[in-house]
Length: 525
Image (tube, rainbow, N blue to C red; front, side):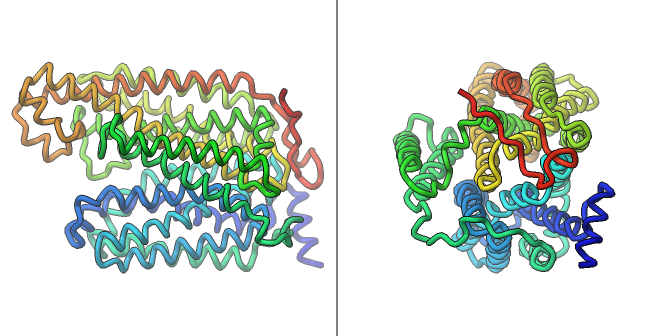
């Protein structure tokens, strides 16, 4: 009784109860685990290949994790809605930790790829679980500032990941890049187990026969096929190759079949009625575009900085500091402003405008652009993404009923994940094509030979080139980034159009219902 009174007094004072703050800290650790892992492993990969071999399968170490994360995301959200958020989230942590331990013990590249898929399976539940639990615990009016913290965790992971990965690999060995997850995960698991208390969902007693197994299978196949198309297209296989065409056909057929199944089952893995909400649909589109732009920028900006501006690749996360720092700061401000005012439409609109402007400015960079100037351009783009990153999740969650909080969170997360895959693929294809064309124009046969295998050269390969070829490559990278960022700016215009049509449905909180349940948006016609 005394504990409940203490919780009530803290809530009346405008503070989150201590138990909720402990849970939120555990959620931040869980989010950090999911986001940090790929960043750490990227730095350790040369050492891993040196010990395990299997260089030809190197890309699968990342692809297996990405595929498993994307494919499992909708399933974790639905399971949380059906059987309770706490147990499902703890299960995802345990699976992630098992995958981490097994990855650290891998004896060859095949084992490592398989264990990374197990890790990715758990990671999908971590990301969705964090957002859905925040949606359960925190009223919509208060939710913005906490989801802003999660955006900060993402930015921190991108900055610190390569540094942490390099330090761990150099001092403890690459296996500790995986083992480091274990103590952090155990802390998060313990805190969640002891402190988190959520009511059982009304549908928790339903039989396992009600699970939409067919829909889940079709969605998994569709997502896997589409991610492989965007991952392999233009790199492993030509875009017009039989493999890519077959994968695209499988993906489209599976997703069409999935939509058909979802209209006919009792408990669809992704209930289509959530898309009747104009705001939810628009936030899914805006989230897709944010992922498209963000991961395209993360791929090409360090390449430009290293190849053209002569920056070191050692601390690659620091190269993105202007963009990620601005994203973190603006995301925190946007969350607090939303909490204080209950209004949010300005942020999708402003964020889309800043994203377009930032991408257009980045497209103007040339071989003489200084690091200060490019840093300012990156900060503009980062500010735009900071306005969008968590506001899209907040509005998506505010647009559905509490019973659909998990699938809303997973769908919003999946939209961003798929956007990142398409962004890297489309912008990468344009970049590669433009680099190869310019190299052929400026360096002739030598230029064509240099970029025949890959349009992205590392520092060692670049240093071996003759001066003329090196200068030609710098011009080619400038031309490639120009094309990629202009396309990104054009895609971002779609986000701006969508943001204009967002309805500002009031967020409930201290001044809303006592329950903090999300306001139900009028269904768009």
